[in-house]
Length: 199
Image 1 (tube, rainbow, N blue to C red):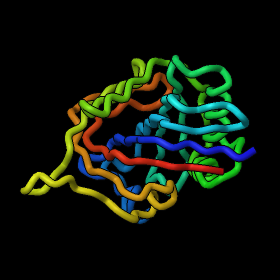
Image 2 (cartoon, one colour):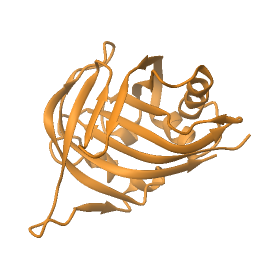
Image 3 (spheres, rainbow, N blue to C red):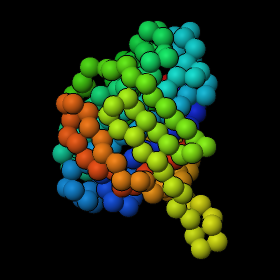
């Protein structure tokens, strides 16, 4: 059965300004390896008859090199307010149980999925703050030009692959991310975006 999710998301990563993995496979990340948290706030969606509206979920992942080169290890986190049916559908979308460009993308770059964890996830868009259980939290600040206009990224390789039309560049207050089975790292940069996925 067809599925779709529409909403708002963000990414924070281990690079100091802007993650080059969004742009190309030919650039080495700042640390040589790449670690990231991607979090999504689903405004509307449906999969196998399960309403996904209101679901919050996040992906915490490590890659040994540039994201495009694969070999990733990741875990899907879902908010404690999601139902068991919502959790099962989100897991299928991300871990390859569904058709469509998003499952195909993660299948291409992630080799190992750690067991899903249910935690409290908060995405406060007014204050630009995200919290994923005890794994980490970050407060973001818009990067702007001299006139206060938000800086954007369009048409980067990974952005197009994820069906994201525009990303807003953000600075992030220094914080740590620490999944118990993945490397710990300091957050320095991020992006916000709207998403609309289907399969």
